[in-house]
Image (cartoon, rainbow, N blue to C red; front, side):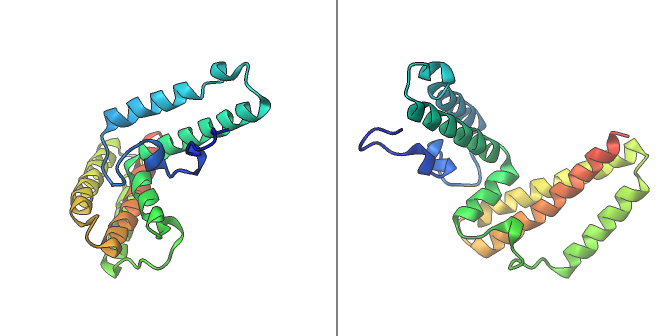
Length: 175
Protein backbone atom coordinates (compact mmCIF):
# COMPACT_ATOMS: atom_id res chain seq x y z
CA UNK A 1 0.00 0.00 0.00
CA UNK A 2 1.24 3.51 -0.70
CA UNK A 3 2.09 5.50 2.38
CA UNK A 4 -0.10 8.43 3.40
CA UNK A 5 0.56 11.34 1.04
CA UNK A 6 2.44 9.24 -1.54
CA UNK A 7 1.23 8.62 -5.07
CA UNK A 8 -0.69 5.42 -5.72
CA UNK A 9 1.35 4.04 -8.60
CA UNK A 10 -1.53 1.77 -9.61
CA UNK A 11 -3.57 4.85 -10.51
CA UNK A 12 -0.97 6.34 -12.86
CA UNK A 13 -1.10 5.98 -16.61
CA UNK A 14 1.84 4.03 -18.06
CA UNK A 15 3.70 7.14 -19.20
CA UNK A 16 3.55 8.64 -15.71
CA UNK A 17 4.43 5.29 -14.12
CA UNK A 18 7.56 5.05 -16.27
CA UNK A 19 8.22 8.80 -15.99
CA UNK A 20 8.17 9.09 -19.77
CA UNK A 21 6.83 12.03 -21.75
CA UNK A 22 3.36 11.34 -23.10
CA UNK A 23 4.34 11.02 -26.76
CA UNK A 24 4.51 8.51 -29.59
CA UNK A 25 8.27 8.13 -29.59
CA UNK A 26 10.35 7.12 -26.58
CA UNK A 27 13.96 6.39 -25.82
CA UNK A 28 14.11 2.56 -25.72
CA UNK A 29 17.24 2.46 -23.52
CA UNK A 30 15.67 4.81 -20.98
CA UNK A 31 12.47 2.76 -21.01
CA UNK A 32 14.37 -0.50 -20.36
CA UNK A 33 16.31 1.14 -17.53
CA UNK A 34 13.13 2.44 -15.90
CA UNK A 35 11.42 -0.94 -16.29
CA UNK A 36 14.25 -2.72 -14.47
CA UNK A 37 14.28 -0.04 -11.81
CA UNK A 38 10.52 -0.35 -11.22
CA UNK A 39 10.48 -4.15 -11.22
CA UNK A 40 13.34 -4.31 -8.74
CA UNK A 41 11.34 -2.23 -6.25
CA UNK A 42 8.39 -4.62 -6.33
CA UNK A 43 10.28 -7.93 -6.40
CA UNK A 44 8.72 -10.50 -4.01
CA UNK A 45 12.03 -10.84 -2.10
CA UNK A 46 11.59 -7.27 -0.90
CA UNK A 47 8.26 -8.17 0.70
CA UNK A 48 9.02 -11.36 2.63
CA UNK A 49 8.36 -9.63 5.96
CA UNK A 50 5.57 -7.38 4.68
CA UNK A 51 1.90 -7.56 5.59
CA UNK A 52 -0.51 -9.42 3.32
CA UNK A 53 -1.86 -6.07 2.14
CA UNK A 54 1.62 -4.84 1.21
CA UNK A 55 2.38 -8.11 -0.58
CA UNK A 56 -0.87 -7.85 -2.54
CA UNK A 57 -0.13 -4.22 -3.47
CA UNK A 58 3.38 -5.20 -4.65
CA UNK A 59 1.94 -8.03 -6.74
CA UNK A 60 -0.65 -5.72 -8.32
CA UNK A 61 1.99 -3.08 -8.95
CA UNK A 62 4.29 -5.64 -10.59
CA UNK A 63 1.45 -6.67 -12.90
CA UNK A 64 0.80 -3.00 -13.71
CA UNK A 65 4.50 -2.40 -14.44
CA UNK A 66 4.61 -5.45 -16.73
CA UNK A 67 1.48 -4.30 -18.54
CA UNK A 68 2.98 -0.82 -18.92
CA UNK A 69 6.22 -2.30 -20.24
CA UNK A 70 4.36 -4.43 -22.77
CA UNK A 71 2.43 -1.39 -23.96
CA UNK A 72 5.17 1.23 -24.04
CA UNK A 73 7.90 -1.01 -25.45
CA UNK A 74 5.90 -1.83 -28.58
CA UNK A 75 5.53 1.23 -30.85
CA UNK A 76 2.09 0.32 -32.22
CA UNK A 77 0.74 -0.57 -28.77
CA UNK A 78 2.17 2.68 -27.42
CA UNK A 79 0.47 4.67 -30.21
CA UNK A 80 -2.88 2.97 -29.55
CA UNK A 81 -2.53 3.58 -25.81
CA UNK A 82 -1.66 7.25 -26.31
CA UNK A 83 -4.78 7.69 -28.43
CA UNK A 84 -6.80 5.90 -25.76
CA UNK A 85 -5.53 8.42 -23.20
CA UNK A 86 -6.76 11.14 -25.57
CA UNK A 87 -10.22 9.57 -25.82
CA UNK A 88 -9.91 7.44 -28.97
CA UNK A 89 -10.05 3.66 -28.61
CA UNK A 90 -8.56 2.88 -32.02
CA UNK A 91 -9.03 -0.86 -31.66
CA UNK A 92 -12.73 -0.63 -30.86
CA UNK A 93 -14.02 2.31 -32.84
CA UNK A 94 -15.75 2.68 -36.14
CA UNK A 95 -15.46 6.46 -35.90
CA UNK A 96 -12.22 6.56 -37.86
CA UNK A 97 -13.15 5.69 -41.43
CA UNK A 98 -10.35 4.56 -43.66
CA UNK A 99 -10.41 5.72 -47.28
CA UNK A 100 -11.73 3.27 -49.87
CA UNK A 101 -8.42 3.18 -51.72
CA UNK A 102 -6.77 1.89 -48.54
CA UNK A 103 -9.20 -1.06 -48.48
CA UNK A 104 -8.50 -1.77 -52.14
CA UNK A 105 -4.80 -1.74 -51.29
CA UNK A 106 -5.45 -4.16 -48.42
CA UNK A 107 -7.22 -6.58 -50.75
CA UNK A 108 -4.30 -6.38 -53.18
CA UNK A 109 -1.85 -7.08 -50.35
CA UNK A 110 -3.86 -10.08 -49.17
CA UNK A 111 -4.06 -11.48 -52.69
CA UNK A 112 -0.30 -11.05 -53.10
CA UNK A 113 0.33 -12.80 -49.79
CA UNK A 114 -1.99 -15.67 -50.74
CA UNK A 115 -0.25 -16.09 -54.10
CA UNK A 116 3.19 -16.07 -52.45
CA UNK A 117 2.25 -18.24 -49.47
CA UNK A 118 4.82 -20.95 -50.28
CA UNK A 119 7.46 -18.72 -51.87
CA UNK A 120 9.73 -17.47 -49.07
CA UNK A 121 11.63 -15.06 -51.33
CA UNK A 122 8.44 -13.32 -52.50
CA UNK A 123 7.13 -13.22 -48.95
CA UNK A 124 10.35 -11.51 -47.85
CA UNK A 125 9.95 -8.92 -50.61
CA UNK A 126 6.34 -8.26 -49.56
CA UNK A 127 7.41 -8.06 -45.92
CA UNK A 128 10.09 -5.49 -46.71
CA UNK A 129 7.61 -3.42 -48.74
CA UNK A 130 5.16 -3.43 -45.82
CA UNK A 131 7.88 -2.46 -43.37
CA UNK A 132 8.79 0.46 -45.62
CA UNK A 133 5.16 1.58 -45.60
CA UNK A 134 5.09 1.38 -41.81
CA UNK A 135 8.31 3.40 -41.62
CA UNK A 136 6.86 6.10 -43.88
CA UNK A 137 3.65 6.09 -41.86
CA UNK A 138 5.50 6.53 -38.56
CA UNK A 139 7.46 9.45 -39.99
CA UNK A 140 4.17 11.08 -40.94
CA UNK A 141 2.82 10.21 -37.49
CA UNK A 142 5.73 12.06 -35.92
CA UNK A 143 4.69 15.19 -37.85
CA UNK A 144 0.95 15.02 -37.10
CA UNK A 145 0.97 13.63 -33.55
CA UNK A 146 0.48 16.88 -31.66
CA UNK A 147 -1.32 18.81 -34.40
CA UNK A 148 -4.28 16.78 -35.63
CA UNK A 149 -5.68 14.03 -33.41
CA UNK A 150 -8.04 12.71 -36.07
CA UNK A 151 -5.29 12.46 -38.70
CA UNK A 152 -3.10 10.76 -36.12
CA UNK A 153 -5.85 8.25 -35.33
CA UNK A 154 -6.26 7.51 -39.03
CA UNK A 155 -2.53 6.84 -39.38
CA UNK A 156 -2.53 4.53 -36.35
CA UNK A 157 -5.55 2.65 -37.68
CA UNK A 158 -3.73 2.15 -40.99
CA UNK A 159 -0.70 0.98 -39.04
CA UNK A 160 -2.88 -1.62 -37.27
CA UNK A 161 -3.95 -3.02 -40.65
CA UNK A 162 -0.37 -3.07 -41.96
CA UNK A 163 0.76 -4.79 -38.78
CA UNK A 164 -1.83 -7.53 -39.32
CA UNK A 165 -0.45 -8.07 -42.82
CA UNK A 166 3.08 -8.27 -41.44
CA UNK A 167 1.94 -10.85 -38.90
CA UNK A 168 0.20 -12.79 -41.65
CA UNK A 169 3.39 -12.89 -43.73
CA UNK A 170 5.46 -13.93 -40.73
CA UNK A 171 2.95 -16.69 -40.05
CA UNK A 172 3.11 -17.88 -43.68
CA UNK A 173 6.91 -17.93 -43.58
CA UNK A 174 6.82 -20.55 -40.80
CA UNK A 175 5.54 -23.18 -43.22
